[in-house]
Length: 258
Length: 272
Ligand SMILES: Nc1ncnc2c1ncn2[C@@H]1O[C@H](COP(=O)(O)OP(=O)(O)OP(=O)(O)O)[C@@H](O)[C@H]1O
Ligand SMILES: [Mg+2]
Image (cartoon, rainbow over all chains, first blue to last red; front, side, top):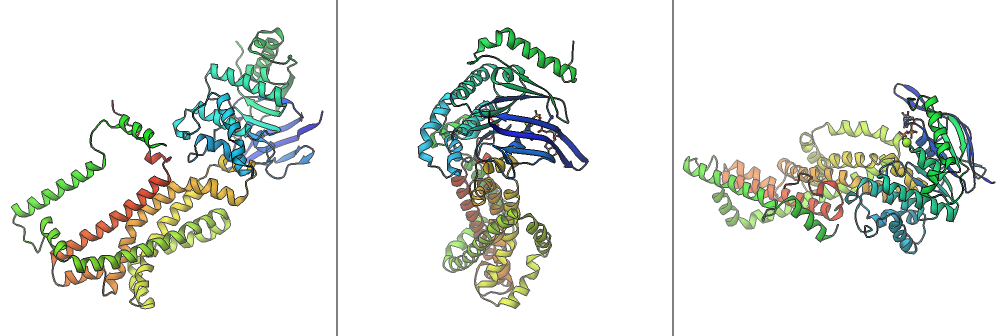
């Protein structure tokens, strides 16, 4: 398998007024082309930091990151990012918020219109294209930002808790849609979440992180057959992987053992 | 937002038959009425406080000369204000792009601002004479700072993630500025423009106070010299009308340009 994204012993500290804060320590991971990686870990363990470094928007204090064998020294543009906050532009309509992606890349805006409308339909926001972001709920805004990350069909997708603001039902739907997109396009994906089930259901490998400073507690291959369906969550393998991750969190004091 | 959507939003918030702007109009009329009655019933002499009706009559009888002076002052105000916009916003944009430049310039700008413009007005007249230019310059100097500061705050307050988003899309610096930083800064810029629009009138009048042979400021000095209190009040009314109109224009442009902004949305204090 070709390596799409490679972290070599990456550590990151932030300089703050009260001294340095170590966010991430010795993160070592190679992501293959077309691989779906989920990252689960407690709040503040450096997951967002990891994404910002993978996209060349922030840089490690130690270690090396490379994309397709090239060391990252500037923003990586051959990707789509869903940030933890929706980052919609208040002054643009929903459709224009999605189309800003091709616009900024110097692509023909009109050529992407139909696809933008399709994506909106897929995330259940048909008919909202002319609204402004303030007219949408938090979960709706988040879904728009997912459309914006997908519109230009990037080979690499970085998602930071993209379904965080969604209710359980919409969430399950979105998980299945994402899985479907991945099956069809085989993008490389880094998917950050707090939800263990979601992480396992989508991923080839789940990276379990320790509390801050974030280190890799364990890398778990899910080994579940494709395509994954809601029923997959009832299989013995799925249940045992989820249990394994829970035990890891208990061991590191993230979850209390009862 | 479509006009229809806006209408719907406003009917939800206010179930009254009159638009909100009537409230302040009514209040204003009530105050004028109290003034009129108070002065008349209290037999206040006209040379101390003339009643509004007398002031209005004076404006109507003297309208030729007052109109001429108003045009002079409005001209100074508009050019000074326009110049301040043309200089402050690009300057703020440049300073916001280059942090070291900002760190070097900002303290100097603040220090220069602590000098009262009113106090240096006579100096400006000494340097630049009696013409139009010194008045424009004073109006400009007074407007300059609030626009600059608000624009600078606006350009600086783009959230980190917005810039990150732009950079991950490979947007060049110019596009990041035009498509992300500038629109995000506009609400701040308009706040500065509103403050400056009222100050511009002050600047022009101060310039005319010091040295002039025309304009509402000059006419005010003349009226005071002749103890013509009614004329003084007539001029004050015209000056405030000029200020209000300029403010209203800025406000209108803001509404047209930023229909999405929070200050134009329904208030959130909905009534049942
Ligand atoms: N700009 C910053 N300056 C200083 N410290 C920071 C900064 N960004 C993050 N940190 C610190 O780094 C640590 C990791 O932050 P990060 O945002 O990566 O966590 P996270 O795993 O994404 O958390 P969450 O799940 O809550 O989003 C946190 O402890 C935080 O305090
Ligand atoms: Mg985070």
